[in-house]
Amino acid sequence: MSVRVQTGCFDAGAELNAFSEGLANAGAVVSFTGVVRDRDAGGMVAMEIEHYPGMTERAIAAIAEEARRRWDLADALVIHRHGRLEIGAPIMMVATASRHRAAAFEAAEFLMDYLKSRAPFWKKEIGPEDAAWVEAKDEDEAALGRWSSGAE
Amino acid sequence: MIDCLYFAWVRERIGVPRERVETSAATVAELVEELRAREPRYAAAFEDLSALRVAIDQELADFAAPLEGAREVAFFPPMTGG
Image 1 (cartoon, rainbow over the protein chains, first blue to last red):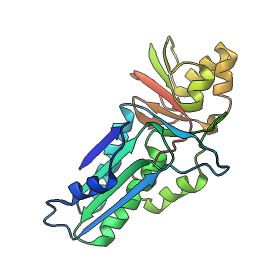
Image 2 (spheres, chains in turn orange, red; image 1 turned 30 degrees about the vertical axis):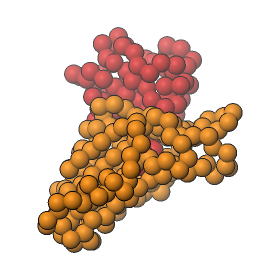
Image 3 (cartoon, helix red, strand yellow; image 1 turned 90 degrees about the horizontal axis):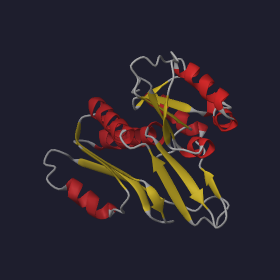
Image 4 (tube, each protein chain N blue to C red; image 1 turned 120 degrees about the vertical axis):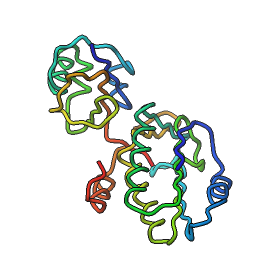
């Protein structure tokens, strides 16, 4: 299991290939990559992501550990960037490997749902003359409800 | 003494990312009351506690949580990772 918090870009394809190598006992590998998109109003120049060094790594490790406890995972990978990111750049990725696809898909969704609202990152959309913090959505909080036997 | 950390718009409103605070507050809520009374920028940052989250020593907590033994308290808006 690998957790990386970094400013630098990553190559999602290369990461996925590396992750998939040597998984003798896993029949399924699922990955998700989050990409910086323009704001709804358009005209975004960049996205800035702030985080809480120390807590970020602990929170992600705890979330990944919970995923391993719930599903029979051969391996899991979480990469999350912070700092200034351009539109189209990868923000984060998760990958999960398991014997069967249901566990790999579910664990990847679980990781995503928890990373969204329980890992201490804050996104800011930077425009040419303005900037605004992205607000958390109620549905992101509600999404945690489906995993309700309590991973907190 | 407790290290107070502020993130995102909480940091922007208060104007510093972290500071050491001399306090005898027993709970997070009491600490917030002390900070609010200091200056308008704190009152602005802590205007609506339902819009804020808190972590004690890097673990999510709530405003009623005791501060005994705490080294670091962080205030921030709901997280927007992923």
